[in-house]
Image (cartoon, rainbow, N blue to C red; front, side, top):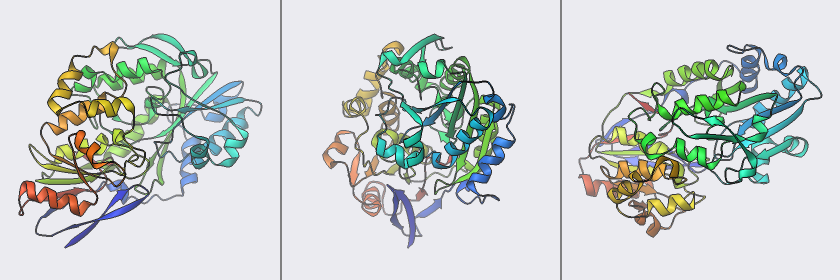
Length: 423
């Protein structure tokens, strides 16, 4: 019997698989990667050697209104490390700079002060100007034209009015934007709901290029890059993280050039062979990404590749913060996967409903695969309404899967589905 630890909330849960059934355990190499330097030193080195850009200190000279866009509570950006360094570097170039930290919430709920203190530390919360983007408050936004898709581009005024706009984030495979990081800090990060929704419309999500690891010809990525260039992002700091959310590499400089270098690094460590299983078990990488069901298609879409034509998927996701949004909950429980997909397909791009893209992706998966959701936080009846099978432990879920696929079913385990790029 093999025991495999799966990320769940802020800890792990054990999965036990008979070795006769276990076909493969797929783990991204980034989780084994050992950086030669400490986290802060990696960040300092990246800032000392920016890619395609002057240093941040040089850029800050003479700039009065400086904005740093950072991620919200749903992302594991190590801001306690990165933000103090960014602030120091800016003030070395301009001690009198008026600096605003703008939290890129996208369509998520506002980040609480308690969450900010966990993310940034007390010193920053107590002493710096922090503003959270509110995608649903029209007074926060200004229109800066249209995007290649035809979507109207509304971005937060604070960013649009900055003399120097900086973003920080981390890079990992993304289930429809190709990779996270870089331009994503702007769209969806600090855009209004109209812009975010249209960028994530049914047609865009349905594109064969809107998938994990693909940037070329990806319509969602294309809009995002143009948005970030239009609002004049002049400098980015993006990091790569291991399984413990520790920095293993950092990339700083030009919006596209620095992001491309980071993508190259992540791709080299995240690409894994596709091995099909009758049963595929994965997670959303634990907290913070597994805090609601809305975020969990990230891991599920990886499992979809490994599950072939009709494999059973087991998704381990705590959902400690519930379903993740009223629109998502309404749409994912609207009917059968076929009915949900049909309903969403008829919604015009400019009338896209917030959060509809995740029910769309789940419907695609659920039309082919039984999906068992392991959670101790969600009501089992609600899980069933979402066309999923509830289970409280990975072992209980595996037993259900054996009943569906047979006792001799071959099992593939992808402990962290978010970090793996199947090739």
